[in-house]
Amino acid sequence: MKEMICIACPIGCHLTIDGNLRVEGNICPRGEKYAIEEMTHPTRIVTTTVRTISSLTPRLSVKTKDPIPKELIFKVLDVLGGITVSKNVKIGDVIVSNILDTGVDIIATKAIDIHQ
Ligand code: SF4
Image (cartoon, rainbow, N blue to C red):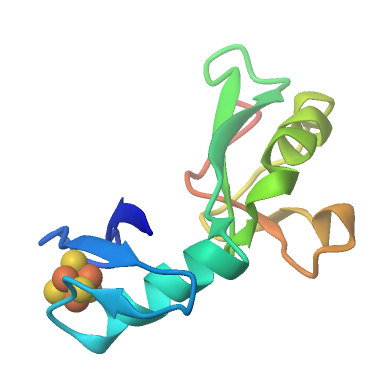
């Protein structure tokens, strides 16, 4: 039996799931889906920042466009630690395509004008 808080909406139902993937405590089906995924293949959206060449905005906030396997979070952060943005960026622009062959892009969550 494992306990967890559902993060699929702000209500935050307290869930339990057993070895047969029977879920209790969820108000809606999303909680059951979340608990089963968390048990079998946990994933997360990763948010962080990368360096830029702008002196006004030295860091650009980015995130994974979709959730990635939880075990890859630190490897993704390692890759992003080596990235420096040197061009203008709009919200949603791809900063790293298909990071670590996950099929997931890293996108900007902020716009920057590098020449300001
Ligand atoms: S089970 Fe449904 S209602 Fe409860 S936190 Fe998850 S998404 Fe929200």
